[in-house]
Image (cartoon, rainbow, N blue to C red):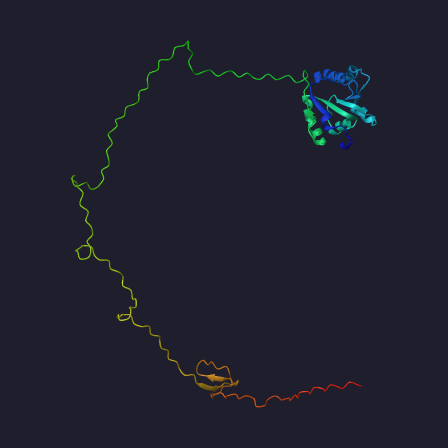
Length: 294
């Protein structure tokens, strides 16, 4: 059955957590509080004990099979004594009420609640009724840890004072540095000799720069010879005649592209003498304006 047939509001839908042995007492209390309403108590199975315990005229105790047989049945308050295994069966229960619904939930039925809330798309509010809640589990008592401090009655153990070990520590010998002493103090260090400048005699040899064959400037002589291009013995290209196919033959490579070359100089090409025909165009005389007819 679809959820759109449910007419109750979400704020009038409650769940009371209660163990199974206290459910019947809680049910009687809820029936006495709502004695003026038409009430339906829904069960998963046809329990005769629950039906015999309820004798109020405005209360009907029916199982899920019996509710399915009377689709026209409506009530103002629906009390689910337990939760069914199927979420669709619980939704069909809610379709019977027009005002409010209450469900009694044991801890063993907690797994059946999640698919019902998933099908409804919301969480059902839970309220604990005083006197019908689950007994609080006794917490495990943890033994206190024994204190490390001695009690006042017992005497403290005689502890010897801590004697630090003695080390044969030698005095710190400062490292001797070769730092020149002052004028008053004697020093074994040799005096610092500065390198001698130009004009002074020094055993140090001057730095000899490598000699490069760099061309000198104007006015300076240079040992480097100028670059001379190699001379090639270029032979003249002579015309040797024509071969069997009529092509010109030369003694060397030739740049002539005309294979009809026979050794004679090329003839100069003159401009063509025949010129295009001249057309004389006469200008047309303007027409005289005609006189208007009288």
